[in-house]
Image 1 (cartoon, rainbow, N blue to C red):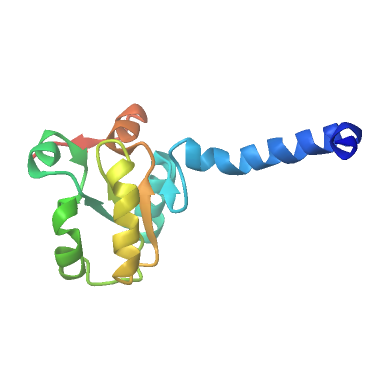
Image 2 (image 1 turned 120 degrees about the horizontal axis):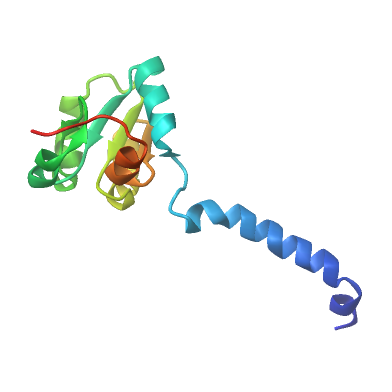
Length: 135
């Protein structure tokens, strides 16, 4: 108890540092998460492939221009045949970013080591006033 009282400031700094390290995971980002601007840079500079993992009706309502639609349930079976070059960056998109985060794990398991999730999903894309196309 004496240690805690004597070093309360050190403990407070350690707790706040730990909180800052955990913030990206709490905030919905995480490993492999990209902002809309980061996604645009990958698309323009490195020819990233955009895969929309929404269901066909959601995809038809609006998606990133040039995105290919593979619903999450079919991703494991169809991704390798849809995207032949595993070295290209892969951007996985869904409505909110939640499903695409889990899709990153599937893509990496299939050998797509440069797979990313669009943080915030298509909603973040729209908020950034980036182009949407409808099927």
